[in-house]
Length: 410
Picture 1: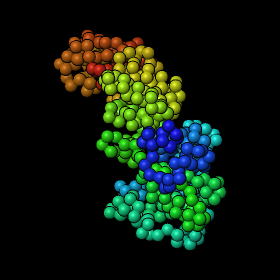
Picture 2 (picture 1 turned 90 degrees about the vertical axis):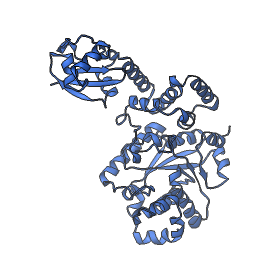
Picture 3 (picture 1 turned 180 degrees about the vertical axis):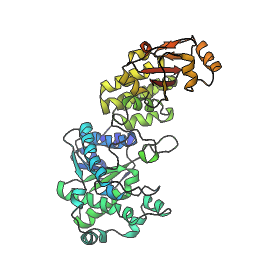
Picture 4 (picture 1 turned 30 degrees about the vertical axis):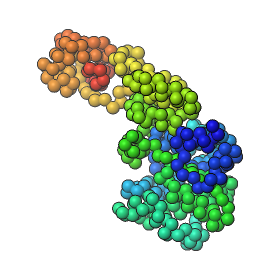
């Protein structure tokens, strides 16, 4: 497949501004950019397929740039779901630095990262209205999908003006650096095309844009931080193990689509993976393959192997193979409790709501359902001493196959 055909096969093209773009993408040699929002200090996994396009375009012979919106982050963009809260300026500036470092780590030092605050901070408001605002019709702006949806619930003038700012970004980057292509998520289409319009009217030149479908689940819910379900691609905010578990639980019906969007695996490889997956879906082969590809790309093979190790040890209950840091990584969100040294196991279970009563605790113990620091406990009289603890402090209790609890000494 030619490059553009591959992008279509992967489901990565939604809208394009010109039929000429197909051949230009196939030929290579374009300078392109994508915008990043600095209201968070990391990209999240829902954005990953969109930003992975940077690497796809690089490999096809195009030159990468990223614009982090230090100016637009101060304003906020319309989302169709309500207005963003105004972000703290110091936070935005700090996030710019972190996102820039993250992008260069992922896509190489040859990627140039701009901050649009650098050219907006000295622009006079009257000059901006005269030089930019007069060339974009209000009717044109109102008819953009996101703006139309947000008009029903109210939109500030600041957010309404967002597309003028982003349009001016494209004009500036085109004038100064010869950038002739912008892309982004389909929710940015109105902003993308405003830049095209400004360059056409003010420079009488054609530049290009395309949008990508948003990454959603089978219900159409976006995988994004605005919707409360973000997993960050910064491993210090979301560990490789958490990312592994998250992707392991992806729906089967979405796996072929996700393998196309999240990875560089080719058609033959994905067809083979899906054939094996569909023959034994209970083994989660597609999900495991996806997790391997994504985590290895983001954090390296060692982090992927660590995630698999933690997952397998926690599933089997064999936590003795894990370091205390790996245990904390894998059990970050499980219930914590405090206990006294030399307590009986049955008292620990009951006093910390691991069992609702001594009768239930005995049932758990007798059935072999209680694993303490990797060892099965069946005797209710067992006393937990300091020698039984991990790292002299921790008591890891597993009840049943999946329910974990972390105890710390008082």
